[in-house]
Amino acid sequence: MVGPPYDCLANPLGAVRLTFEKAIGSGSHPSSFDGKDWGTVDLFRHFLFDQSHLSQVPILNLATIRWIQPNTLVRFRGMIQDMLGNEFYVGAYKDGSVWRTNKYMDFSQFPIGSSPGSRVWERRLLYCVPVPGINSWAESASEVAIDGCMNWTSQQRDKRGRMDFEAMDAKDFPVSGSNFEDSPSAKRMKEDGQDYKTEAACSGTTVVSEIDKDSFPCLVKIYDSPESELKLNDVFEFVGVLTFDSEIPAEKGDHDEFCNDYCDDDLVHLPSSKVPRLHCIIHRKLAAHDFLHTSPIIEQKPHWVKDVRESLLKHLTDVLGNDGVAAHYMLLHLLSRVHSRVDNVAVGKLSLNITCLSKESVSVFGTQLSLAIKNLLPFSTCIPLTVEYLSRSSLAPKKDYQTNRLIPGVLQLAEGSHLIIDETQLETGTLNSVGVDNARLLRNLIEFQKVEYDFTYYKMEMTADVQLLILSEGKSNILPADIIMPFQPSSVGSSEVVATKALEAWRWYLATVRSLPHSIESEMQKVVEDDLVAARQTDRSIGSQDFSRWLTMGRLISSSFGETSLSLEHWQMVKELERQRRERLK
Image (cartoon, rainbow, N blue to C red; front, side, top):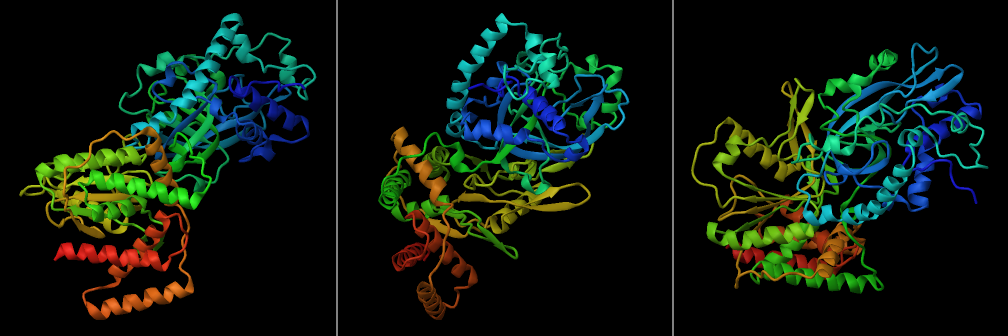
């Protein structure tokens, strides 16, 4: 069986060129590819997923950029922090009588000149960053992929040591007898290839010295995808061609003038020496389970889920000083998510305010709880709520029109992030105007799951899905949580080291059951309605917010057992938990 005439990992641009030439050779005109793919995406999708080669693609980060070669296939996992608009480029042009393409490249390899009939295409620019608050275990989930790629990369280095580097890059790795044997690229293999001066201008070692060590941004260029597919703050994995072009301005010739007239890349103030470029071929949205190391093998799912639930609940109870009621609410809080919106209501959120904590006790229980959450969830952040912090911090993202960039704020978080707010440090003081705005921003986030972005001339609310946990001495007057939980520990929290296998099972459990669908059968609807009416008659202070909270808790308790519908047993658990909590509030 004959292999492909290119190496998708080492020379993805060869695959792009050959699929383009095949499409042109079959009679298609480049104008038919305006905003469309000609087979490249299908080829790479088959290679990555059908043939299971995705794990061989290096993940681009601060460690791997030191050895990843430019113009090879890479992956980047990150959050869309800013959307920089569109960029025009010459996507197809004639070189004599031969059609060529610049797709998935920053600059042309061949002179463009004033080629008649050149096709000007569009691509979107996304400024992506590592997910804010990503925890070390979620980052290390990529280590397996990185290690797997090191061997492949070493082989490529050895191969490049034996072969002429420029010739290898200029050629398309033909294989005798392939379908592409008679293509223009295959014929060029027998001739002296063009130098890829622009494509191999610099190595990863050159770039890494100037990259921001505190973050690792990447400018992702998106082709042929509807705008609705990629939204601000979404977490994606982008697979595509990595390019470094920090030396390009000194190397570009007059033949690139036509191309440069259309390119807006220079306007975004993002030099490639600091921000690598990734020309995206395939992208996929990531969820919490995509950051897990492994998925447990489940033989009897319902039984297994209940066992994991029980062990996780015991762990949370130990962390919270043997306070079982607080542990139950903590479990429901960690499973909560916004699953729908009705008018201004974020349905499904369950913010938690643990009270009766002092500066001394929060140093014990708060620290242990924060560590437990870091070990369980992929993204988590903690902020101290003090007068000084509120008055000085930038919580809201703000548009900088000088650089045409969205400056990130603390509250620009990915979907599913967890945020701990430590209010035990708050003392009497006066907030300045920034502090007042920040307090309002936090209140809007906890009440409506929305964050206000500052565009100088106007404000825009962006929806969020952030789990909020407030630690305070008394009920927070700044942050009105859904659940007020007085803390009653009976022992010092546990600081035992948890086995890795247990942590992986708990992570899988939280990532999986929180996404389960939910329904209430007609019989249970009648039971719930009767109980709500009876509760209202007994206590007139109970209102719609309480009803909504109970229904949310019912859904979460059902999900915690791996069930998709509310049972009478689970509804009774909701009522019992609320009874115990109200006893503490008296």
